[in-house]
Length: 331
Image (cartoon, rainbow, N blue to C red; front, side, top):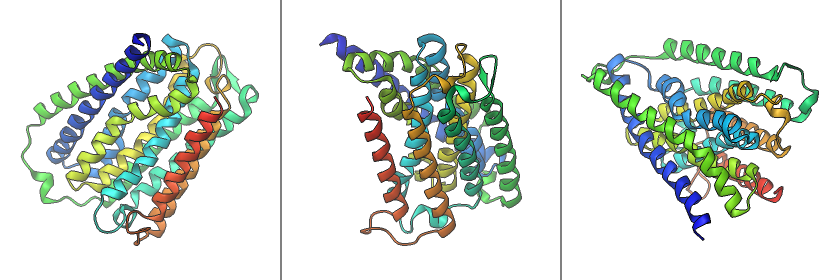
């Protein structure tokens, strides 16, 4: 019994540390936005999304370089994309009045569009496997993903700056030095816990008799997205809806980029050629869910199904459930 409980306790401890640090990150980032007059959408997309995705980055590198478990790395990154998109349902439920898509900034269309392109390259690489072109041990999809990520950040920044209008909140007095210190310390906690997470997840998968693909896609992806969840809830409490959505969509852009970084750390060949085919299903699910978000941002639905959530959220829940079931059944 103890051989089973200990890995689970380690996993839960990592999750708690990540959740607490994620809350501190959200508060400090919001105050830094006040100090420097940054737009909340940009803060969510670039600053928060990058830092809250540190667990996925640390876990991905650790999984391939230390644990030797490429399925955990890919499952975690793609599973985190699916979890982030599914968490938009929670945001929709918590948002009062109209669905979140009714009030969201059009800037998020750019983030979601780049997400579709990047996930499309991931799907193609997963499907083609060893037939995909590569140089040394690195797949050619890796530099493409890195370039797309940088282009996305530049494009969204320009769009955000062109449409940002300073408000009275931008001039609120803030101790920037103190907030940078708090932000940095919370980021370190997230990084350390994220590095520890793959070992705990790998031990837990063996103790519970679950496949690494399933654990990486469901359990580890859920834990490493806790910073995004903590940031999301905190941002909603602050009334910063665009920071909330920008953080979740920006995290998905970063998660796709993590696959390129993990590919560099994986020396046995192209990373996406050495993993289970089931991961293509996760990437395709993330594509479908991102497509639903784009539809919501364009159509901006006003009604709610059974007065609970928008029909976009119903579709996101259905897609997430199908993906989890397929991974579990595939073993």
